[in-house]
Length: 460
Image (cartoon, rainbow, N blue to C red; front, top):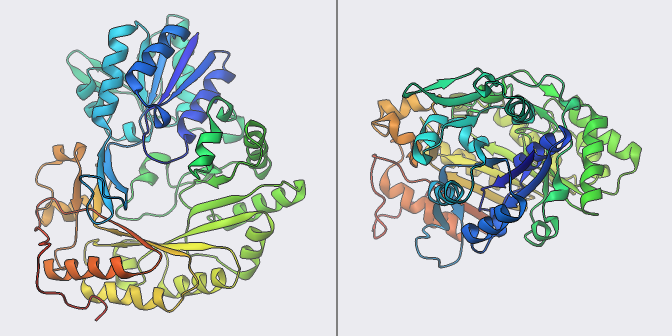
């Protein structure tokens, strides 16, 4: 069958999900093409032309997110505090409405932005079918059953309308990731991604053993790690470089360095093969960071690290169930600082229990280790799925009054952070060098007055 994969994402990011699914469909024997919305000047018109030429039998739409913020330091209308809102629903609906008008192809929804809101997306778009979970398995299975005339409502992870209501089939996780298809990055214009300094995403595992209160990924992928072999990861890196020589690769796992022995083995395999590759990891945890690990990172081609700290207050780390201590944060900053690898630090302020004192504790630690290249600060927690433990606090504090609002942009911030303090904190972030930040305003807590005359020192 002719299968068209639409990458509906329109903000900077690797098309990793669509690439892996496209690879799986092609490996199953289908003719596959992709339509990438990121570079489309007129998505509807360009999609019409693509469909008319290719005549797909099945169209899979990969949805990366529902709504959120994009860092934007320009003076674009709607931008505030270096960020502007985005809402993926309208552009995706335009694509779906276009497809309904011009083709009889079967339309299947999927992607990480679809996983937690399958029913809401189907209702919003007026569609009947989607796939949740790991589509490298379920999408080829769907294509096989469709082609054979079988009931696709039996595909693991599917969600569909039935008798006026929504039905769901349990997801099935892939146990042997080495047996999945290689990502079809050759179908994407990697030169244009490189021009935007977007690295090519490669997954080294599934699962997350951390139980952070604001993060839902362990509910999607499980708490048990399912690891690709180091040989398979290196194979994927070579596969990417065949699609585009000298592509930069980003390990886009939740925590590349956990388990540590797995990350070490991958680095050693890269070195053993003498791969000429530059790689980064945007999210490593401050656990198990040593001089030896940093040396392995550097020798295997690491050119950038994102250290996911979030807080340097033991009280907040415990409250957020981050799984490490301030002592470990300091050790990670020490070892990375002397490794020579460019790295940055991400912070998150506003989780339940956050106070001006805990924010000051975090800055005291971070400012004691000036070696980082940049600091990424997120203020406020985005509430975007029923699987976040923080929703209990949001309901209790009156910042989430109706769970139906989660399909919209809903945010939470600790009520122990006064309005005047938040204005001062934002002012101080704007004055920091190499600091990028985004602000997720609370849903129903308070408004931050831009003309406030009270400007306390946020570090005091």
